[in-house]
Length: 169
Image (cartoon, rainbow, N blue to C red; front, side, top):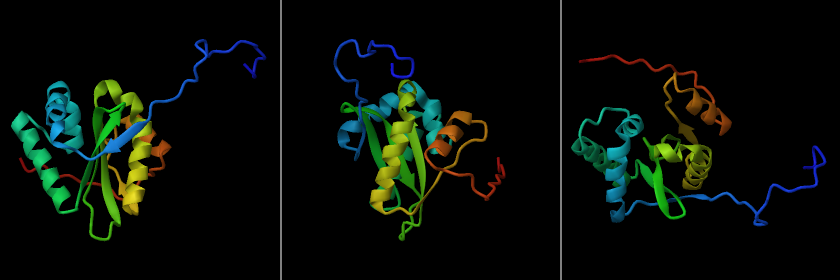
């Protein structure tokens, strides 16, 4: 190491270690099984993505269909997150207005792939820029310290807006 002047190299195999890229692609009909498997394995994570309880797979499918409808109206864009052609999650931008002033961003990664959240955030932000979105808005639970830290790391700043909620049931 240069810092401690060791002559040995950590790259034992002689092959340069490169990070596997995180890529985004449009959803396809083949993704139905991935959506189903994600629900079966991580309903709680998908409930956070959608911001609501999804007690049955049918409830989940209804929400996915709503997003697909929003995509057809150009008020949302959903992309599949992949590593090595293996789907590992979703990047969703919704609440898009006609002028693309704002978009609300959501990221879902399978629990065992959440260590790739920083890479996913960066490619998602780059894609939003390509789309012409001027500002991204993100809602994070105040007790989710790791997501708050990640959000700040990729450039999100706290808003001066405060969200109030009134339970009706």
